[in-house]
Length: 274
Image (cartoon, rainbow, N blue to C red):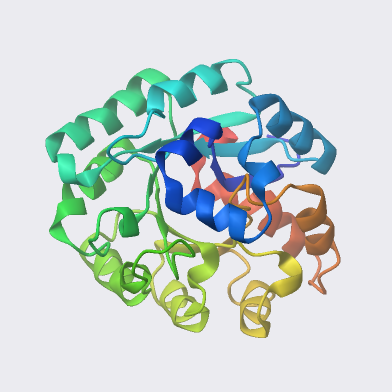
């Protein structure tokens, strides 16, 4: 594939109905004066991606009881923009095998290319056995799992986001490709150590503007972790133009920016390169 890939590996399809169904997220957006970004349409996403030069977006709903969003709704959206939007499944692990069936259906029928888990929604850290059937299914389906790591921002306990839990997951499921979302902040150094330790564990920078990257994360990205860090935004929290301009301004060695913005994503998430 000769196309230069600029990929967002962590984007959420959160129309207004999502914020109505999950008030804690609306409270967060309201607190940081982001109300306007809680009412974006798919046309807004397409326009912002075009303005920023993004050509691959991994898009997911967020599964929780009472949500009107579903993997099917995401499938309807990405079907209209198949070269830009790629589906990422979201399931509630507390539903047992129903979650596994939903994941398999999303991959086999909707052509989704990853699974996203937000452990704080389920009050279980990612090394809990409740997730194991999903991890096994991801291995069988040949897709990565993206796991929110770090503090929650919304008013939920932070404990499920500690990177240390991923140590167990990576050890017990060495065939599973794991992408730790949100850079593990404020435990980024701990996550860096785990990404160095485990060949199957990667970091994405969603939720953090490049101008705010810690020196430790920049050092990792620019040296022995150059193949381990993926660009993400946490859309719709931020647009693309600003973060990508900031990424381009980072003092990175030759070739690192290209890997960070898309090359690593194409390798770690094979569906991007198909």
